[in-house]
Amino acid sequence: MATKRDDLDSIVETMSFLSDRNRLRIISLLSGGEVCVNDIMNTLGLPQPLVSYHLRKLRESGLVSNRRDRQWIFYSLDEDAWGKAAKPVAALFESPEKLLGQRKKAAKARR
Image 1 (tube, one colour):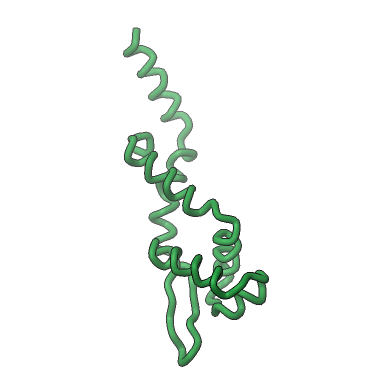
Image 2: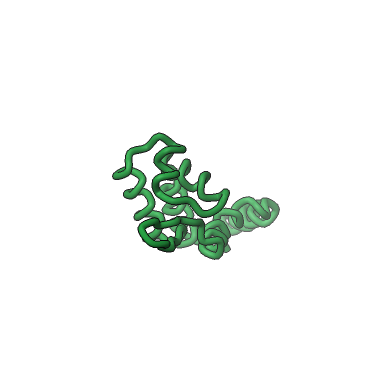
């Protein structure tokens, strides 16, 4: 269940990692399909070192994958990794009734 401390820590870490504005802009662009660094730079108006930095962080997290085609490197979102990353966050909001039930049980236990 997503209310365990470890799960909450994981959710906080994921949301913190994704809270960078430029990282979110890159992710949004990649959500449309495979893109090369040059296209990311031109579309978002970001310098190459900054784009490369964020792509490296996203690759290290496993959320983005890449493939090489001659001198070009194309980046795309890893859908399986996104599903795993989003699952604990989604669990927080999918069943408010469960959370309310847990609060009631905790309140009774304190009495």
